[in-house]
Amino acid sequence: MMETLQEVDVRPNAQTVRRRRFQLRLVFLSLMGLLILGVLLFWSIRWYQYNRSHVSTDNAQIEGHLVRVAPRVGGYVQAVLVEDDQPVTAGQLLVVIDSTDYVLQVRQAEAALAVARAGLESARTALAVARAQRDQAAVALHLAEQEAARVRRLQADGAVTQQQVDRTLAALEEAQARYQLTEAQLRNAQVQIAQAEAHVHQMEAALAQARQQLSYTQVRAPISGQVAKKSVEPGQFVQPGQPLMVVVGDTEVWVVANLKETDLAEVRPGQPVDIEVDAYPDHSFRGVVASIAGAAGVKFALIPPDNAVGNFVKVTQKVPVKIRFETPLDPAYPLRPGMNVVVHIQTR
Image (tube, rainbow, N blue to C red; front, side, top):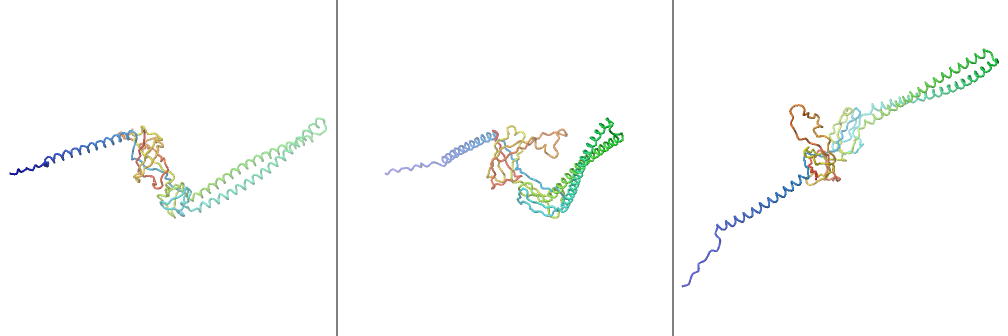
């Protein structure tokens, strides 16, 4: 009888399979946990080292030159030559104010100057006449003095009568009086010259001022940039100092970061800065600390708090730090005042 071989099932049972899968899963999770722990530890060390060598804040904005354009004279607006957001160059004509009254003032000043100059010429002529009369009187006085001296010598010798002596001395006194009179007239003419010259200078200044006032009827751009907040229209009456528009400068921008006072211990001018602009998250900028403000920002408030009044609550103050860009700006990434940025100052 043929012996039947029993088949042996060498396949592992279900419990063994589950145990092996659990062990593999446990090993995998353990490795993943160690990997995650290593990554967290690595980034924690990096974060700690970065924070030790950097000061960061998101309380920072782009700043620039914002110049408010205002007229220096009043009048009706004749023309407005720009629109909002229009680029302008320094000296470009923006607004024209009616100049009729100012032209008349210039003409009046020119006429007054002409009269003053004519008065100066008249005074110069009078001075020349007075000087000539004084010189003539001086010659006459000299001759009278010589004649008086000669008569006195003759009188000592008895060669002239007393009547001749008296007549000669009277002529001398007359010559002296005439000379003193011409001297006084000359001094008066010199005073008149000084007054006429001062009047001419005064009228020249008045004319220069009138011409300057006339030039102010043409309101020009103080800097190159872009027009913003235009609030003037033709026909409007404007007053001196009234805001008409703002020109946002395009020549320079910088960053002002408001750092906590507790973060300023190691911040110094000249330290490098990484700048992240919210508008361009994929582009980074490099800068350098330019200066640290001389006072906390609260001291520049319209109404600074007075800690000596009322209840005192200690608040961590913010100190403005100016940061300038280190490299030329890329026109593809224009920076405008007011944009939010994040700065990282490397202090070590």
